[in-house]
View 1 (cartoon, rainbow, N blue to C red):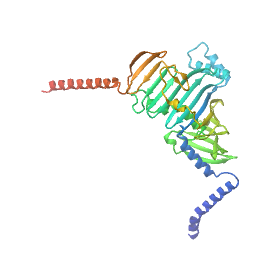
View 2: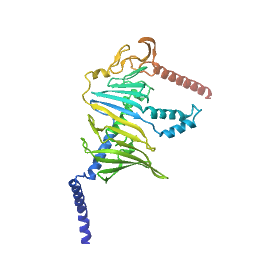
View 3: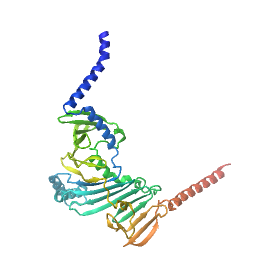
View 4: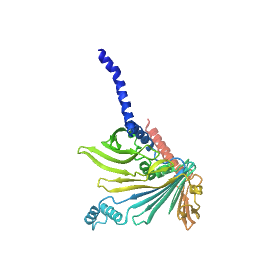
Length: 385
């Protein structure tokens, strides 16, 4: 009995001594303890759930979309769909062939943030380098607006239009591509916006000169991160991640991504120079490249957040070319059409606060309800003996 009691008392102490001794031995050998890696991983996981950079600074990114399938597969699909121009796979194959021959399609992203205001510019380039689309979104405390070659949208975020999408209420929706890129480049794909994964099941084991961290998710999914010591301001960095899916057929690799060893210091922490997504065919189907980042904002950055005049010039896009203005501000509430800067038509905008259109619709509905109620009461009165 005494032996059992002594063992019960001293076993936890002994285990603690062994654990401390093991950690000390790891540090003496130059290897960081597994527990330290796991704590860093959990901290970064929580930080990675908020991926939009906060604080003043700028960020320039290049997002490339190379061919998603081998050339042989693309050519086979083109042969099989020949004579069927409306076949859904044919347009996909033609686009993939252009990427093989001319290079990836590209999205160029620029982001500036200053004192609670931000501007996000996105320019889409085809595989041959020609520009086919651009749109900019600007957010300030009292004004949100978006600019493209054709349209200018304006709204007051404090009194957004009704039934016109969530962007007017929450302009951060426009930053989805930026948030995804920062999730990879700044956070190594650690973290998720999924509520059930806020406190993931993380297990870390040593692997060569680094560690493998397994993160199990609901639905039979597992992420395996390769983590190594870092020479940047962060003690560790993610070098790759493999995504596995387990079902009745077993566990299969569904995709992986690789992060650069090179790290770049930004106003929001150390970031990878690039991240590459690889599909189950071994093809790099998306690549995020950090072009530049810093907090030395341009001297004229204040003008980036100012609404351009009808016949004016945007400091980044140059002379404006839009031909329609959707102004949802309560004091305006109008759609204005232009031709070379001259107003050709103007009419009220449905859904704009104070436009009266929404109030009239509610009034019509209320009048209809009241009329139906009066008819019902009259019929009921007649039916009563």
